[in-house]
Length: 486
Image (tube, rainbow, N blue to C red):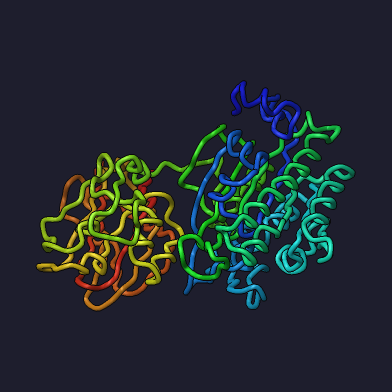
């Protein structure tokens, strides 16, 4: 909820409805700013975007790189609109060849399928979005003529919001990306383009605020980008700058001035659907989850304990690793070899920025489904300094209560295999001997595992162990571990 000061500043603006009664009609406005870096939005003359940051939540996040997909607009906007990562929607370029939009449609199409009485609208400066990604099921698709560009997109979006009554809206603006290609993200031209799009965003928000029924409407405002840009200009590669994106959200329960680290690119679609009261069907197989429903995660509790690099040079001054486990967890390094790179000596708790910048372009960027802080056993990086023995470390969970019958162990995993390396998941009941549940001896792409467990009669607690053994091989990343029973 917005505080009193923020509401006073908002006045009759598009955010004022957040403080009013609950029986209002939910609506969504999603704004896509192509190639925009949040750090440069903070530097630019961008009062409307910066006000959204003050009045809602801000979530910086990162995306994939090759071999999953390059950091291009096609894969990026397909991820934003469908709520799934490129390994599902299968877009790898700006031609959209081989896409799986029939299986994973855009969120506006999901709205039409679930609640056809709602009115959907898309207005885009980059015409492939309205021509290819967003399906004909959407009520109104407007492809702006090239000569009109973002000005035409803004004018048409304002007209639709003023004269029509859309419930779910997506607007795409392109000029920031154009400036990035022409002059680079470090340029004044890029800052000027952000200032220009900020004014256009302001006109669109003003059109929302000026709607005759605005007081009876509950608008969720979302802003995102498809990728970042390098300082010299361009994207498509794997640098940290190119892999940047963000989500700004006002409404939908987003706390004013809040910062989140657990939100990722596919969450816009899921959050938009949730705000409209559309239940997410598990059969949709979405990667996104509504930002309004954060999930508890033990590893994320370590964020304040993260430190800077010791032996690694790639992460620079970025905060990003600790060997201190969360409350209730432990790490057994009794069989761990000596020496090696300090940061990766046994199971480590880290972030995408720290881990991928330590060793780029070795597929660590494909750890898609981890969020915020996650656990890593990285024998490859550990072995980059003199070692004695092998990497052998076990991550041990808290004792989870069980009630008998069946239980489910859920976790996000990403495993890259080489040589004699081995990952092993085991469970022990009431402190008994560990029983192996599954092993990893070949590559496993980022995915969520659901392992069914038969709870022995009379068992009251279950402890899970994740053991990684190897030498100068690859790695294993884990996140979101939970065990449910009953």
